[in-house]
Image 1 (cartoon, rainbow, N blue to C red):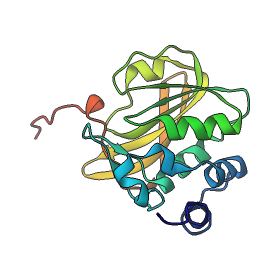
Image 2: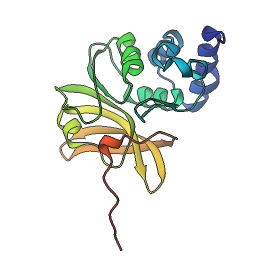
Image 3: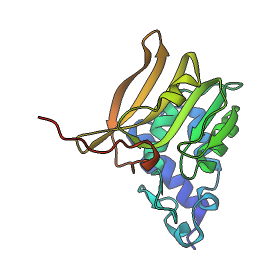
Length: 188
């Protein structure tokens, strides 16, 4: 097994910082919480590689850089209430808890118990799920990856008068969340 403390430090310095993860609290959490404890046992040697980690159920853990970018964009503040939705939400939940948030987790497709100031969706979707948008307080923030014609982009959304409006900010290789995919339809 590699030196995980050294690998964690390299992840922060060589992956996260150069890719725009600037939130000091997020960097501190990602530099101190052992990611290898949250990945499947057979993949622990790859815990700090900047790639998705396949899960037994067909889902995948988000790569560290994409997760760090989404968390940094969310700008979590101590005392906020957050929901993390994904196939393996425990790592992101531990990071947000370390930053001082009250965190709940849910599997994709589960009905959330809001309200939340933050929603983190750990995977790619075509459209942000209506039930997650409804769980956000006015002015609440949501982060996910938006899949659009074969390209996946990280996005930050704000819940306003017109619903959750997203702006994309970085391309990323993020696995789709099957529970939120719509079947392809024929269009002209």
